[in-house]
Length: 327
Ligand code: APR
Figure: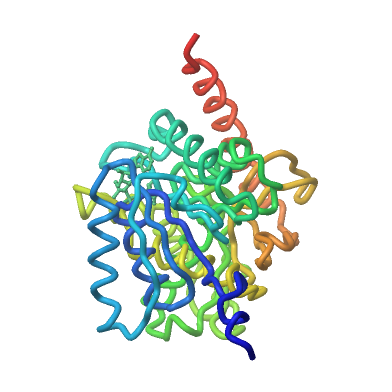
């Protein structure tokens, strides 16, 4: 190998931009660096904050035995050439505030982030984390101009992880042995699917009562609110960051992981022009494939109610954005 090949552009590290350096964004940056899978650009609107966090993370590298570059910035130019952009910017849930209440504030933030980030990284996969998740993913996709399958929302991964946790606690078995599936929106109308949940292949209905399953389904639906209620001054961020990190790793390393996530539907499940939680196979291209599950009438009705609510919220958010355009 000659010395010039060592300096060739193909030697550059993969780069992940995280927009929003708050609780979820900074924890995600830390996870990516500690996994040693990419350099990280942490961007926020508050000057100094992302730079300070990036320096703090850089100073941990010698102790963590990794060499990843972590850049803090308020300038989208520094995000250029990212393989993945994760949008966590926005206002999190507060007690008494539903995800839908956040639409007004977060829509403007997410649209701006998607436009500016995709202009700098036209080949990136965009992962949206900001709530209300399904609506924000749609708005981010429209604003980005990216192909629909290159945009995906992190919602189902988190909901499925919560369901997995509650089943593990209920049965006293390892969380590793539990597989769960949650489809629909990342909100009150999400559809946990006990029929598709197993303990190492054993359907959970064989291991617990219908009453217990109904209780865990309800707890999963309220998973975010339960934490908001306990914390009072913030919302969940460890499990959301871990969920986003799993998606980042799968996409960056072209692992064909199958996860529930908000994908653009083009006829699947009889739906069009909507981002909604469904089982997806990921790849370096984003959502490689949407998997269509066989649903019972009851499951399908619940899924369609969820879709109708997301569709309504998308329309309302679009009206809101149109009304807020100056002039
Ligand atoms: N551009 C960049 N960053 C922004 C912008 C903007 N226009 N507006 C706000 N931010 C930043 C804030 O300055 C803050 O640092 O987004 C960050 C949000 O961080 P937190 O308030 O700590 O919120 P967090 O808990 O990280 O949640 C972020 O993820 O899970 C969802 O519901 C949650 O929508 C919320 C998002």
